[in-house]
Amino acid sequence: MKTLRYRSQDPEVYFLEEVLQQLGYSVYVSTYFGKDTDAAVRDFQKKNDLVIDGVVGLKTWSKLLSARDNLFSFSDKLLSEADLKQFAEDFDVELAAVKAVNEVESSGKGFLIDGRPRILFEGHIFWRQLKKRGLNPADFVTDYTKDVLYESWTRSHYKGGAEEYERLEKAAGISDLDAVHNAAYASASYGSYQIMGFHYESLGYPSVDAFVAHMYTHERAHLEAFGKFLKANNLLRHLKSKNWAAFAKGYNGPGYAQNKYDIKLEKAYQKYSNA
Image 1 (tube, rainbow, N blue to C red):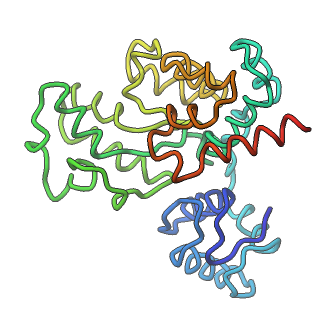
Image 2: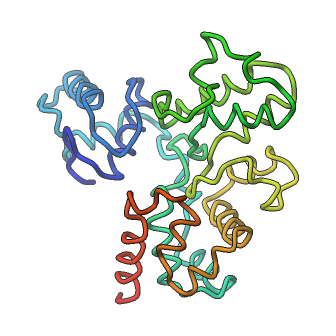
């Protein structure tokens, strides 16, 4: 495990914050080691007779990972090399290109440490999904629901990790109507490739619940849904030709350049093609 400290930015920070959240600390789960995480680490170190320095090195990692039983209930749901090879064969795409996309576009792993697929709930999408079902979103806005139902995008209500499920369940529970339940589950992104639930129909799933249930099974299911998404949105041609800018624009939207997704994809491809 990497040594992490305040202001570290790394995928392993996400895992660290997941563990802290599982241990009862209220931290925002992301790839950035912020002040909340620093405070939680120092508290954990104090309670476990460690040096209180906020640095997550070998000793702190060892204590963290032994603090909970059955911490890694996702470990039997991970992609293998064979899965990526099969995907490349099925879609007639170069394996190095598949590995590049898997590295850059996946979120590192598709499951929380408690075995549920990673999600991110989008309150502005929930607003649109309610309208799509003939409901007036404003009728459901209260002080209780304002962090899960709003008209314009904001990241201010994101919690990350397992706490995103609390937001999803709150949204689904604002009414007993099936339409509200379906709208809520369609308004979260799921798994390794963070595919929005509302895509279920275009990807061939009979219902949003069927899509979500599939996401619970294995990272292989996430890869399968990703392949369907690429096919449905005509993105495989860009992957085959290694047109990284066109691929990133189609998958990540017009803001892809700001986040350098195309550059990251090309660098990852070069790494795997030269391996």
